[in-house]
Image (cartoon, rainbow, N blue to C red):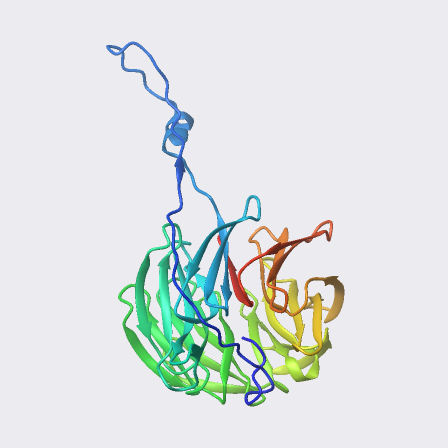
Amino acid sequence: MTVDSHKGGLKMSRLNVKIISAMVSIGIVLTGCGSDAATKVEEKPAVKAAKQEQIIEKYYFTANEGGTISKINVKDNKVAETIQADGVVHNIQLSPDGKVVAATLVPEMEGGHGGHGEEPGKVLFYDAYTNELLKEVEVGNHPAHVVYSGEGKYVLVTNNEDDTVSVIDASTYEILKTIPTGNGPHGFRISADSTFAYIANMGEDTVSAINLETFEEQRIKIGNTPVTTGVTKDGKTLAVTLFSENALAVVDLETKRVAKVEVGTGPAQVYIGPDGKYAYVANQGTEESPSNSMTIVDLETKAIVDEITTGNGAHGVTVSSDGKFAYVTNMFENTVSIIDLGSKKVETIDVGEIPNGITIMD
């Protein structure tokens, strides 16, 4: 989700791409106890649990518009693997169980560039540990964001040029529905109870609320150039970045009342922390005039709590499940900022070219 000139000023990059994948090692630590072979010793439950425990590395992933996915170890923030793909990799999300990572792809066109409307977009599904490509699913034109429903039943994909969202069965990879949205559907989140998807329509001033039980769509008027959304776990509050207003819209979903909080320049993605108290907003700006900050907004008081410096073109943002770290992709310098939310210290690492979406194992 970059700023595209014909859809609210947001622009997607188109770059050449290739595929490299490698296997990830999973360490299994078994704790045993030796004794006389003829003597059977009853093990304590704690010992049994230790024997069965798998020590599994955790990763976060960035979708890089230069045609790769960077897989980074959470423990040391080092890139462990680079997965390459034939097209512009725009957005990415892990399945609820952390075993599958899904990414949207705008295919490489003749001449080596991602095109508009010439070939259907795809969602690529990878094994999150082995990097094996499990499935390619054709969707609509210019797929933007991909999101799993919380119970893992559906995968939804916004088709930015078709003004639709595709609903995919997460177990069979079959497309179940294609639902009309507003103009230029882009970033979105699904409520914790998996009943509603809230999709920002970049080409107009609305959010499409899709009922995932009836597949009906309603629209909520929000503001100028909505880019992405976030929804609190209790389903009561919606947060929407408004790129052209340099604001975060905070919406009471019962009354549909909208309050706006001024944030940084050109806000792109928003992520609501695990406690539902704060919204974390990545301020991208434009390539010509990049912004470089993450704004933290208190959703109850609708006040800014802090603004932390990141790299240029802060775009994608996510927060660890314990609420201790935020991760921000910096599109215009090919980096990720890792922010300690306690100390406010920032570590910056190099990743693939033009990092966009980001997702983390928890």
